[in-house]
Length: 279
Image 1: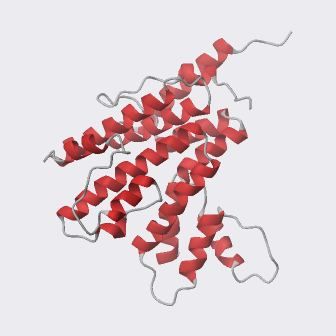
Image 2: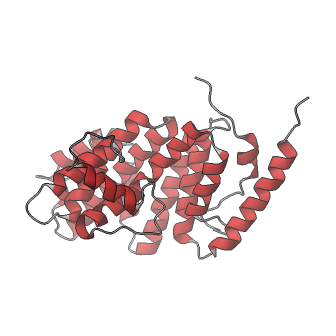
Image 3: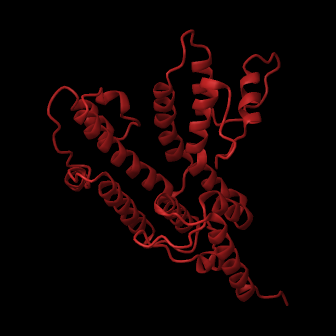
C-alpha cells in the first residue's frame, strides 16, 4: 500500500528536546495543524491517539452528565448525549462513538448501582489497546503496546508500595499484562519477554518523584526514536512527533500562543519553498 509523504510538513517542524522544552506548540494546536495538513485516512490515525481524551470525557459523562469543553478529544458533549439517546431509540441508527466505547457506555448505563470511575476507565483502556492493534498504523500499534506495558508495570509497583489492590489497575491483554496478573499471588518475577523490565525496576527506585517521572518520559522518548528511526516522511513519523509534543508539554511552561505562532510561520515558509507550480 502506498503511503502519503509529508516532506514539507515534517521538514518544517521545529526540533524538540525533552531537556529544553522551548517554544513547543500545544497539543490541541498541533492537532488542528495536522487536521489541515494530513490526508483524511492519515488523520484518522491522529484521532486514534486522542480517543484517550474521549475516555476521560466518557467517564465524566457517565458520572455527572458533563464533559470537559476544553478537551482535545474527538467527541463533543452533543456526541455523548446523542449516543446515549440511541440506546432508547426505536429505529436502529448508526452509532456515533467507536464500538468499544458504545459497549462500555451501554454496560455502565444499565447498571443499577452507581458507576465506579476506575471500572469504567479500566474497561475503556483494555478495549482501546485491542482497537488500536486492529486499526492503528505500524508505529501506533508498537508504541501504544509499549506504553501499556510500561504503565502497567509502574502501576503494579506503585500499588504494591501503598498496599493497594494491584490487579485492579492492570489493563490490556498483552503478554506482560498477563505476566503481572499471574504474579499477584506471589513475588514478582522478571519478565524475560519485556526487554525494559530491569531498566524500569531500576528507575522506579529513584526517590525524587519529578526525577523519576522525567526518567520515564526519557524512556518513552527513546522508544519513539527507535520506532521512527527507519521511517520515511509519513504518518508514522508524524505520530512520533505528536507523542513527543505531548511529553514536552507536560514539562513546559511556555505560553501556547507563542509556540503556535512559531510553528505556523515555519509551515508557511516551508510550504512556499516546497510548492512547485504545475506545468
